[in-house]
Image 1: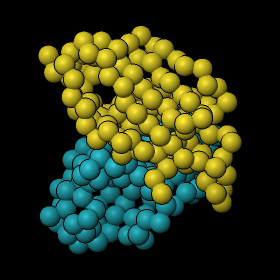
Image 2: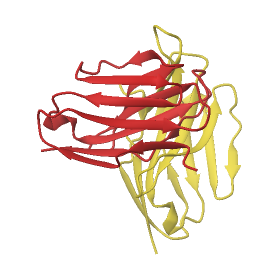
Image 3: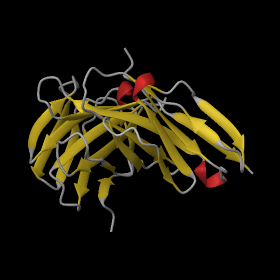
Image 4: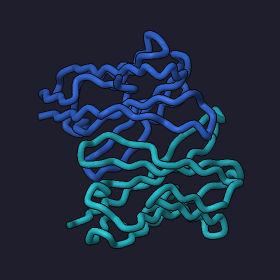
Amino acid sequence: AQKVTQAQTEISVVEKEDVTLDCVYETRDTTYYLFWYKQPPSGELVFLIRRNSFDEQNEISGRYSWNFQKSTSSFNFTITASQVVDSAVYFCALSEAEWDTGFQKLVFGTGTRLLVSP
Amino acid sequence: DTAVSQTPKYLVTQMGNDKSIKCEQNLGHDTMYWYKQDSKKFLKIMFSYNNKELIINETVPNRFSPKSPDKAHLNLHINSLELGDSAVYFCASSRGLALDYEQYFGPGTRLTVT
């Protein structure tokens, strides 16, 4: 079963539109962390945010905001007033303990490609 | 200064060859990883090392052998390359193995096997 689901394969918007990228996760652990990474066309992966399972406060950083809801196992990412430079593939990831070592294992969703046109 | 670097950036080779990808991090991190990203952008962990010790081996074929000569380096050697090995390989590092440590990724190595 998919542990991290990003149902939107690709989203196209016009500059200045708001856009929300969905992420639904699955875990039996009570302690876990969720991450968002950005992969621009240049290819590198850039860390955006981390959220722990005990903190359901929404977070805002400039035009970016994240909504974490444990009740629906979702960690959605909204970009307000999108810009062309936001065009990238965005990955949601779940950090949970590996079953036999207890150490971190990062499981990525399949990514959402965001295309922002001028 | 690049935090996590990989060489080469591109690698084109024929089936059956043996190749290596090098990774270095200058962040002072204890933990390093190798990931494989396929043509559909699916990103999956292959290995993780902590203080030069193998922690996770995610059912990767024996043809893939990581080597960590020190904490700052984690190289990936691939024997008898196959067409299905074509992918982008990312090295990453983190402060340690705790769940909350974010991982810093290298620029990736695009491997093409012909």
